Length: 161
Image (tube, rainbow, N blue to C red; front, side, top):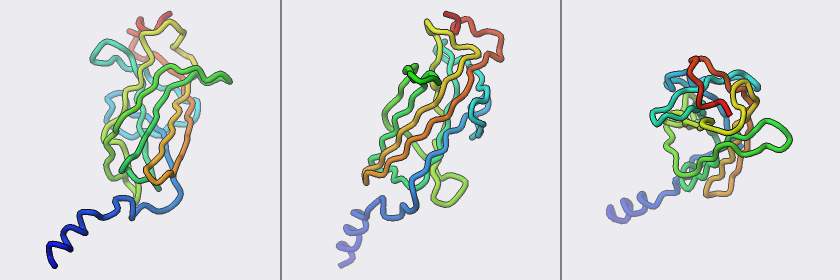
């Protein structure tokens, strides 16, 4: 009987505790990439030099009402205009940890969303993060967060067309 209980516990529904409407908060991080940093729509986001020589902005995510089992999160940077031209896209698994509020999840580390090198103007230009998350139960949430990419280091040559 004990073996049956252990086997049944191993088959528990990982999404059983998920409740509430799905929600997604897009944020940034400080220049070091260490914090969850909310920002207002259209705020300036610093271009950061990456370890492989490109320049990126930080994206951080906080979720609620979604199950991480089978979670698919499409992350993009688009131009912030009617065309919404794709600049960077990332897919693939992400690692989430418990967020600050019960029932919330947060990325264990911010994502590097690449803007440079490029053939388009980047510095002082409007972009937007665009994120679509769908879990294995079919719950979907889509959010966009506009920002302006700025050079605060004085070494943003890669971002000049």
